[in-house]
Length: 148
Image (tube, rainbow, N blue to C red; front, side, top):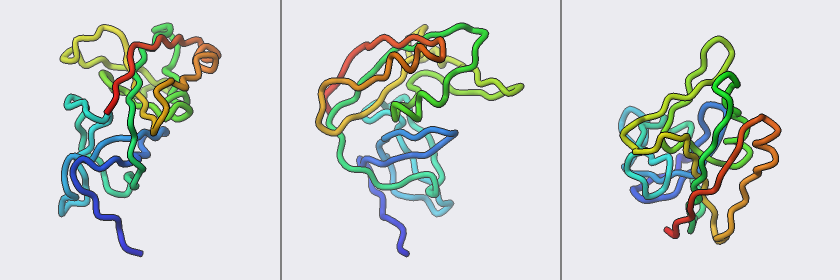
């Protein structure tokens, strides 16, 4: 089976850390078997180097939806909700320690709250699952939608 040839600005599906999201390839594959990918399409601050075995082709997406999430600092971050909403962290990293997942905000983004993003193909309306977030004792507040 031949591996897909990735090229810059191609939309890709990334499967990482127990969740998946749609990102944007920003390089050709490296000889080391990695690809530079933006976690959020069009957002330069979310660039990461991803192993090729975690990336697959994705169809073109037309909208990026942003939302702020918040919960108790004593509760573990609901990673399952990223998977469920096909969302990715925008301004924070997930850190697992002592069986809990905590978050670490990157202050360079200018947000003091946790922000997540998801992409859709042709729906301007968001499909966030607010009720499911609240079942984990976390809230979700829509911030904005951007056309790509």
